[in-house]
Length: 191
Image 1: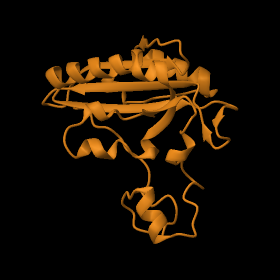
Image 2 (image 1 turned 30 degrees about the vertical axis):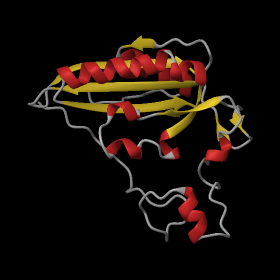
Image 3 (image 1 turned 135 degrees about the horizontal axis):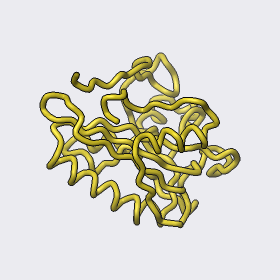
Image 4 (image 1 turned 60 degrees about the horizontal axis):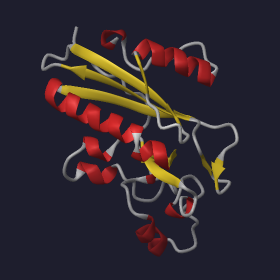
């Protein structure tokens, strides 16, 4: 049976005001159109990252895209505060390795990424600095049949190490970190 991702949720709406245009716009343009509105109520702003020592760590890596689709990865809704040493070191090398592997071995790759939020660490008392960054990938052939899956975690410190896991291993890790009984990232076909 071919692997088909299950996606739940609503369509993306404007984070600042539901009545505004739903597409992405940069903060500069929005601030000109709506000068009396603070744009950082529900999302991070560039100013939150200035002089903090943290990179704007991509969840969906820009290096996994070509052309115009790369631009969308720079949205601050795709960014988390990531330790600079890890982001520019071991995590970057891991993302580059996956991009090479999936571009040669897979017809389609499904990707789910996330973080384990910190209980109390924030940039400028606004933006959560996650304790962990994680990713899971499912590679399928032209018939939609799973070929392989890959998962990894990285402590968001200058430890500069990527922990490679199976999907089951990632499920167990997330269950432990998030204090939940069950985690399933992909359907069983991709295990």
